[in-house]
Amino acid sequence: MSVEDSIYQALAPLVGNRVYRMVARDAPQRPYMTFQQVGGSPVNYMESKRPSKTRGRFQVNVWADDLDGAVALARQAEALLVESITLRGFVETGQVTTYESDTDLFGVRQDFSFVF
Image 1 (cartoon, rainbow, N blue to C red):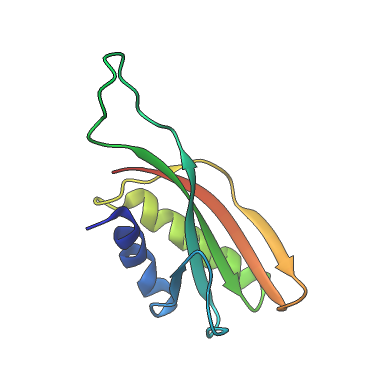
Image 2 (cartoon, one colour):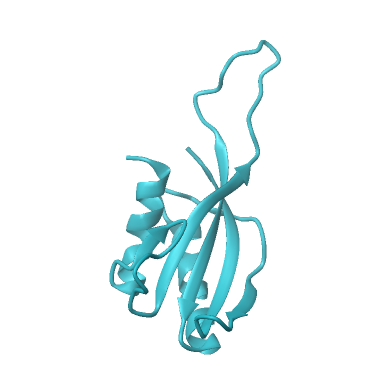
């Protein structure tokens, strides 16, 4: 199973499976989440050998009709990703709130690292 599949499986129960990679299509029911890889901290060896694992950084975005709902879901998502035995997420950033006037969506984004 890929790390992306594991992230999806961890987050899906929070929003009725409305978790999307990169972007949500077709204006899904709210609330929903998106996530994408936004970099990472590569592992490098002196002997020029490719490591068996890598550390990827992923941004998780929570979208809802109101800020309180988005924040509450983002806190639940953080707990699930960090406490997951499969993922063992590492919090990279604090939560950042946002508002999109074009879609009237309130959001929270946060970055996590996973070794996979």
